[in-house]
Length: 430
Image (cartoon, rainbow, N blue to C red):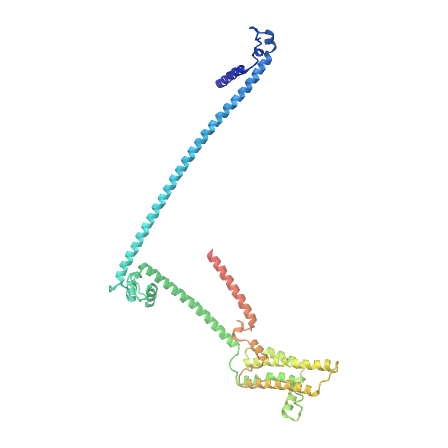
């Protein structure tokens, strides 16, 4: 409060000192040294109001200036104090970092010293063990010395093969003995022996599993072999294997009408009798194809019989091509177009087809009677041979699986196995 009174008094005198119309303020005439009562009475209120207004304005300005000066001073003090405190904190932090670095260096040095002591202890132990193993003091440890020393330390009898594997692994020079720089601690020998024994047990277990799998495969193969009669044909099998070729022969007799014109020939009469019986059966050709296809799927029948039934069907189908061409000639070219081929052309064509058929049947019959599969007819034999099942083409139920289907099944199985292996690997990683 006393500061305010002080500043107000100073402001009042300052105002009075700077007022230019002093006479108007106090009502004094400069020419007279006396007061003017009228002037004093007329202007007291206005003069006091102006004095109060000027006083308030100047007091406010002075107070603002004083407050500004006070705040600036306080800000400088606070900034100075913060800077001082911040510098102190940084210095303290730097001292702390240096202490941590010093402690880390000390710990590293202690760890290095411990490692060095441990390495020295191992080296000393290895040297003592080497001297004990080196019975004849020749500066190296032989296989027999290694075996005797390990058996003494481990108190167990070791197989010669196991010690030899150990020697081979640690004998880096390959001279059949362990030198000082090749010799290791007994503990390392023990660990490696345990590793070798563990590996041998795992290998034996895997071999046992593999042997079991192979045995199962052998049993399955034997079972399949019993299902599939692929053995050497008997005499009756050889004779029966020739009968299916009567089927294409009967359907091919039409092409031999010019060569079989001699009705007095006993062979021709026999063929005519068989042909008459064959044609007397309704749908004889269709029934024969169904019968051969069904019987060739019976794997207990000898392979040569099954092969000849399939090949007889395809030989008969092959005869359809010249018969179809002859039909086109008869009904279209000759009947509609009116084109007439020479009779000799038709006769020669028919004779050639029939001779080729007789040659094919003669080869198949002769080969079958000798017990050999007649698989040398171009195109047809190769196709039939691909359709003949083997042991590996049968599933567990003895059903034939075509090679294309089996290949697709194997690919799908490989994909499934790979997917399972990847899943197992992911689970192991987790």
